[in-house]
Amino acid sequence: MCPAMERAPTGIQGLDELIEGGFPRNASVLVTGTPGTAKTTLALQFLVNGILKHNENGLYFGPGVYLNEVAAQFGRYGYDLKKLQDEGRLIMLAPKVKVEEGEDYVKTLFDENLKKKIVDSNVKRIVIDSITLILMFAGEFGGRRRNVERIIEYLKDLGVTSILIQEKHVGGKEEIEYGMEEFVVDGIMYMQLIRIGNIFRRAITILKMKGTKHSMDIHPVMLEEGGIKVYSRDRIYQ
Image 1 (cartoon, rainbow, N blue to C red):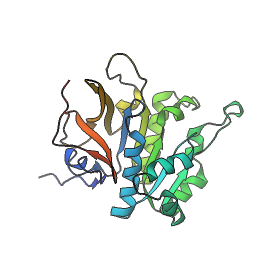
Image 2: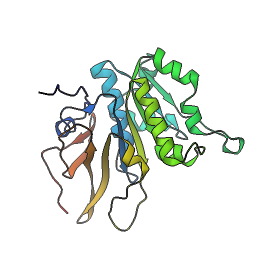
Image 3: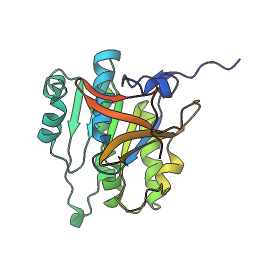
């Protein structure tokens, strides 16, 4: 009998039931979807639950975002991100780069001072928000696929479990288009807005999860008191 794969529970109600208890430890999981599907909320919940429930410190790497806005929006669910930062359990970075001077986000992520901070702070979970923006302003280094491979190799060498957020464009036709990122990552979670009558409902589907027997149904997602919740026993039919 093969030994059970070690898991990093997300702590998100309903989600872990769909993926045999959590992400494979040290995996890089792509969370992809259009704006408004709660990708960042899910990723922050993964970080905060890691800290509060599993004593696993986290890093949020959000190029170009406004951290005060992120903290305020997530604070609506009852979490104080600033307090976690002050306690040294959460690192939140929003680097800016001067593309015209040859700077890029990949180099910033690989910075030795940041790597030392990650190791010294015993970070075990990392969120990159978003991989789309990082690749948009990345140097060549062998092209898009190679950049993704380098980032994932870097995260695995650090021994962390990670979420990479990917932005999808809003289109008139609902379809999944695969890029280089999807072929390289260990898991893919697809978040979408589904129109049912006169309303849109948030939903999630696990398209890929290495070494995991997982659901591939479309499950409803709700933003409730305490954060995001996946209704694992419910399905949305189109």
